[in-house]
Image (tube, rainbow, N blue to C red; front, top):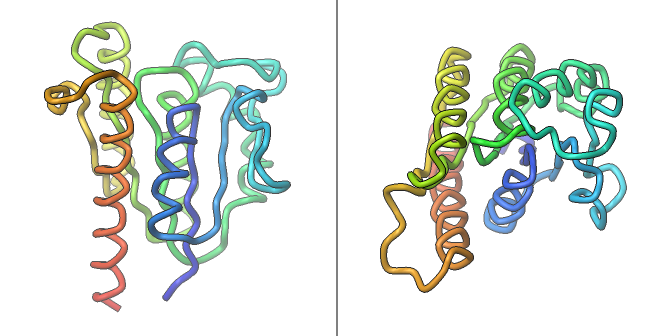
Amino acid sequence: MKELTVIGVGGAGLSLAQQAHKRIGGRFLAINTDREQLKGLPAGQGLVIGPHSCGGKSAVSPARGRKAVEESLGDIRALLPDSGKAVLLAGLGGGAGTGAMPTLAKEVIQRDLNLLVAVTLPFGLEAERREAALTGLKELEATGATIITHDHAKHLTGFSGLEEALASSAEALAERVQLWMEGESDAQ
C-alpha cells in the first residue's frame, strides 16, 4: 500500500485527524496558526503557519488563514510527501482550516498524490461560520479534490450535549475516510 499522510488543518482539523489516524494509521501532521493547539505533539508532527501574519495565535478569519498558509508554503512543501496518499481534514467555518484548505489541496494535487479532503460543516445556528464554511467548501471543490463532508446541521439530534455530537461526527468522518482508504487499496 502507498504511504499515507494524515494532515489535520486548524483546531477542529487536529481533532478530526487524530480520530482518523487512530483508525487508518500512516504518518500524522497537524498544521495550524495557533501554537498552543499544537503543544504536546511529538517533534515533527506539528507546524505553526503564518508566524508573522498570526503570531502563533488563532487565524480568526479565513482571509488570515489564507495569508498564513501562503506565508508558510515553503515549510509546508518540505513536510509533504513526494508520493503516496494524503488525507486533509478540517472543520470549515473558522480561520485556519477554511482559509488554508484550498491552497493545501492544490499543493497536494500538484505533487500528484492521491488526495482525499474530509471536512465538517458548522451547525445551522452558527450562521456566520456556516456561511464562511460554505464559501470555503466551494473553493475546495474548485481544486478538483475528492471531498467528503459531515454536516453538523444534519446530524444534531439524539445527543445529550455538544461534545457528544462533535465526537460522534469525528467518528463518522473517520469511518468514511477508512472506507475511502479500503476502496483505494482494493483498486490497486
